[in-house]
Structure formats: C-alpha cells, structure tokens
Image (cartoon, rainbow, N blue to C red; front, side, top):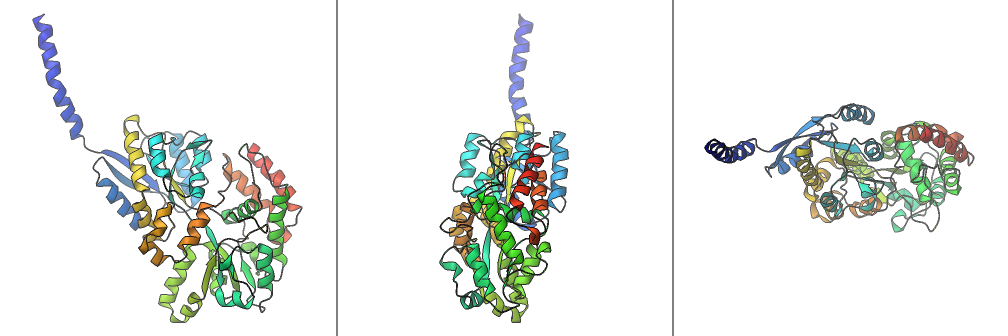
Length: 421
C-alpha cells in the first residue's frame, strides 16, 4: 500500500513538470506554401500574425506558373505531407482539392470570421458542396478599360452604365482605322476560358451546372459564341486576336491600336508606372477610363470574370496543429492583411471594407467599380476535373475567327466528354 501511495505521489508531482515541458516547446510551427509573387506583403502579413505568439509561420515558395504550382501541391498533398499546413490555391482549384480530401473544411467559427464582409463572388470560389474549404486571400475582376477621348468621339460614355457588347463594338467600329480595336483574350490559354465563362454567365447560363451537366448548347452558349465571332470578324477586330493574352492586350491598348480593352486591375498600376518613367506617356495615362464589364443581354447585368487566390489548410496537418493552422489562416486573410497586399502588390482585396480605406482609394481610383465587379462576379466552373474542362473549352472555341453560333454545340460535347473522364 505504501508503495502504491509513493507511486501516486510521484505521478502527481510529475504533472506540473510535464505541463512545463509542454509549454517550453513554444509556438506551433506552420508552413505556408505559396507562389513566388508578392514577397514584401507576404513578409509583412507573416510578421504581423507571428506576433500573436501562438504559432510561427514559415513560407515555402512554389515554382513559377499555375500548372507547376498545382503539380507540386498535388504530389505533396497526395502523400499526406504533414508540413503542408497553409496553402495558397488558385480560385479554380477548390473543388478538385476538396473532393480529393487534400484540404480541410473550415470550422464554423473560422468560416464566420473569414466570410464576414467578404465579397460574394470571392466567397463562392472558396465553397464546395455547401461547405467552405478556404478563405479568400486576394481577389480581382476584369473591367472595361477605354480611352476617354476616343469613347467620346465614338459617342458613348461607358462610365454611365453597362454597355452591351453589341453597342461597344458598333461604337468602336466607327473610329478611324488603326484606333477601332477592342482587345479581349483570344489565345488558347486559361484567360480565354475566363473570357468565355464571363460571356456565358452574363447571358444567364453556366458552362456546367452544380451536378456537372454541360450548359453550352443553350441560348447563353450561342450568345457567347456570337460575341466572340463579332470580335474576331467585325470592324473592331485586332490582328492576331488568336494570340492575345493579358500582356499583348495591354500593349495594344497602350500603343493606341485598341481603344477598348477588358483586363485586370493591374493594368492601371503598370500604366501609372510607365507614365512616371516616360513623360510622353502621361497624356495617354490621363486618358484612361474604366467601367463595369460589358453586358451580353440588354437589361441584364454582366457577370464579370473572377480571379484571385484562396488560403486553405492541408489535410496532412497533424490533429494537434489544426487549431493553430485555422487561426493563422484567419489572421493572414484579415482586413489589415488584405489591405497590405492590395497597397503593396496591387492585387485587389476580397473584403469590402478595404475599398473604403483612404489609402486604397487614393491609389486605386477605380475601387468602387472593382468592388462591385467582384461582388457580382461569376467564378469559373466548380468542377473536380477543371483542367480537362478548361482545355476542352479553349480548344472548341479556338481560333476565335472560326467561331459561329454552332460552336456552342461542339463545345458542349467536348465539355461533356471532359467532365466524364
């Protein structure tokens, strides 16, 4: 009996020591995997969150290019890598990663925190089958950029309200030769899928519905095809439309070959930087105007494209580290963090209140239009086999000059085959 008592006392005496030993282990070590861009705001966000003292965040840099980033993440997540704790995801990866069980659904408390004040389009991109699997970190939508003087010459004011594509192309076609171009994506790449999806959604349709059924052989699909055909074959067609991407569109707009362009918000910062370096370009920059993405159907608001990235927690994260990982995710996607990213990297925020900040409004005069566009943006299809689906769309609608109303049925069949693979 005395022996048992001594053992019990010894065990009780050891408890405080064990607790102290646990406390001495320090904050939970977490690793954040993200792309190579926005290094300065990333460091600022990590430093701010690490100051809480509950965890430490180490950044691992993924390679350049979305495909290579996805490849490395898939390899690590498939192997249940315990060191892949926080992950920056392209907005189109949510469905695939959630369906495969590579990322964890957010707890209700975290979901409430990250969704509060987050713009609707961005929040949709983080949700799969009714569950929130990620927190919007950065967002963005495309605007209609235009030369104000030329729009006036063409008899339109895009800032007054949403033009239809038909109205825009008619007005652009009235400009002098060499100035009437309308720059939109046309190359076979992801940006072309973004464009086609925005057209279909603006016409009231979906490339695929929530059950994975294709929806291109519809009035909406045919309306999208008609816009592409008009862009490629009408008087405002740009030479080489089949090779246009964001940067070649920007070049055509800056050099005056295009008077109108659909593109992301970064083009404003790029033009401002050029105007600072080249005094002769300042006149061009001062002529920049911006407006909501064009409508496909008169009387129906457009559904602008959605870009950006989300932050998720890897499913290989050990159980005893998950609470810390969710807390870090909430901190890194906070309003202050998103403001820092927007000011330092030029990438729009996903939270509405950031756009009311005086510093943000001074640097981004198009803040209100961008906020409204993100709120009402149409995410690309939430599909488990998104890469195959996107390739099928690009192939069916390329080159743009070959597109007719009948292309919608061809694309529908291609998408159906892709999602069944």
